[in-house]
Length: 238
Length: 157
Figure (cartoon, rainbow over the protein chains, first blue to last red):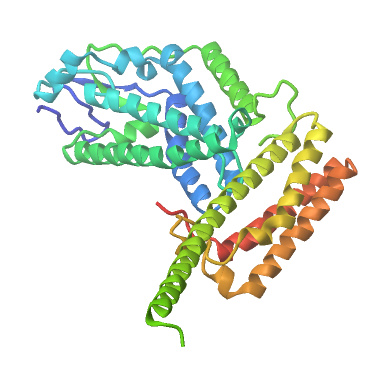
């Protein structure tokens, strides 16, 4: 392992060649990350303290963030693109066997853990949309498409998949702690966006403003439409 | 005095009747618990359907009346859903707490509150007053919760 400790900027994985500080995580990516980090615990808290309207609002916001993130994974800045950090089985195995190639942003394991967390969030939100509480008084906005019994069953699954998310987040925090203790500064770059990237490597290409505006518009529209039960003649949000 | 054989037969018959009665009570307790659970699920389905109407852009007044009437009818019938022996002692996995039978006046009062709010809901729906129905739904929900908080146990795993 040859990570150096720079006194100023934060080193990431890779050989200790000369490094330059570059923008790795663009602002939308960082905002999505930290908002989800706040909203996921808030969703848990609001549900367990019987504040279902807050719980739904939190869920709709996470839904919008997820829609945005999924689009951004194809249209966003280089650091956010799935093609940039989802690597094939050979690279993952090589990383596990200790071969430390230089790479931009997530290491091969980290990249797939991001995918796993996003998938678990999509699952959790998706199930919540169809959930019905035990008295039929509170329900997700799309529960009108399922029976009371089905909505109850979905709610029970929604309670179970919560633990999958907890497990993945626990792993995520443990891994970050592990890397930080070994000198890889990865938390601060997710706040500032900047990381030391090896000299000679090109910084990730920034996204176009038009891409951001389009992705944000789609995310807002989807969240709004879902919150209103996908009704062509919407009444009140649920 | 009857002969020994007749007395034995009478005693045996009495025991058999007693056992049959206990068995029947146990069975009817279980049946009572299962019936109640079916009623409660139907009530939940009506609450769900009513809520969906109230969130719609153009609520269907007939559907609102149908579900409100169901809730009102259920509230009236609710006291009959708790026959003695239909609690946890019935052997059925039920969340009905023994307090229902131990604190009969308290339970009856909670049931009365539900019936009152449900009757107002029914009246609002009959009058076609959707705003009143919406307002009454929270009152009904509060009555549901008022009873459940005291007389329904936590979800059994």
